[in-house]
Image (cartoon, rainbow, N blue to C red; front, top):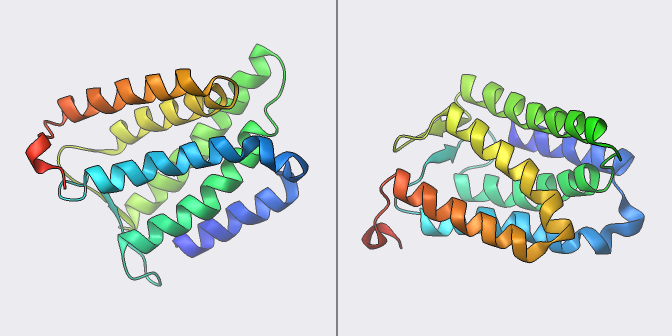
Length: 168
């Protein structure tokens, strides 16, 4: 399933991604990837969600494919083609949140994602809203995006009672 979704993201990026300006999106792509790396590293012993697949053998490989392919495609399209005007931007935001949540919902139905330690689809929905809020912020004001992200991470660690001793 994850190979298929990554292929679809790359096909979409090929068609709609702002490839001619990829260098200006590169820091935001790395920001997106670093966030996922931090999750996987910090919560190695206490995962909130795990990916499963028929072809890819484990969560780590699925995550690496997703980070490199889907996140790159997402930033090149979502940030690269972000429309002007509050109304159009709001619809664009909702479209991308909807795409990500639909993919996750289908994956959860088929068991390709499982939730653990109190995490559930609704937490993912809130997290997805934050992701699509923070990506354009990072593109324009990276330090502000890092500040907001760190606050959010600390808040989630507190809510889910992740102790420093549980970190790898």
